[in-house]
Image (cartoon, rainbow, N blue to C red; front, top):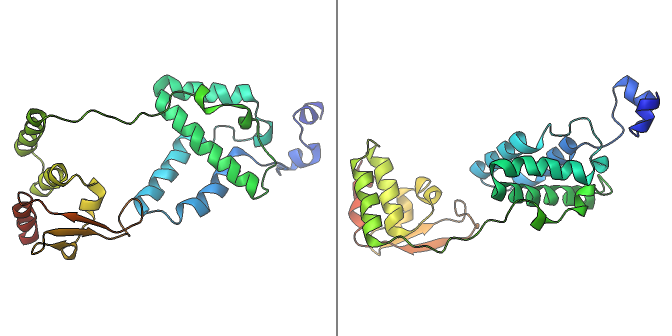
Length: 215
């Protein structure tokens, strides 16, 4: 009984197996349901996988409000050992999760608020390097020589020519391409930002698209 009281648990509730506090798992699951429902299927799976692999079962039987700043930092340090940029991103997402639960009065607050994001790993940096023509040529040749299917080869080659996201092309339909006007319309349902995108089709890309449509 003394140990239970020191852990800020009600002994009667603890002994019956009931929980009188909110765990990190409770918060993550509560946050995921309204957050991912409006996202694309692939993004939903990404969020759920992220939560399963990094958030759930980290502090399974502990009041999320009682997790100390040191415990939070030790956990992020373990992630940083493998990927410092990922640790920084994990902190950002978890902070959003806990702030959401706080705004819904699920919790009053956590000790995570005492940590600064700049002290967790390192932030991702936007790349500034652009591939040169001879580098692009090597990639193109490597794609041609690969054992990948014709569809996969075309997918990557068209992406090099047009500069689209792979998912936009992978989910594209014949009706999205107007070869007469040379315009590819990406509907908002499959665009990352949820807005319609109209892209010009480069002349060199047109034969590849025609070949795919005939397949």
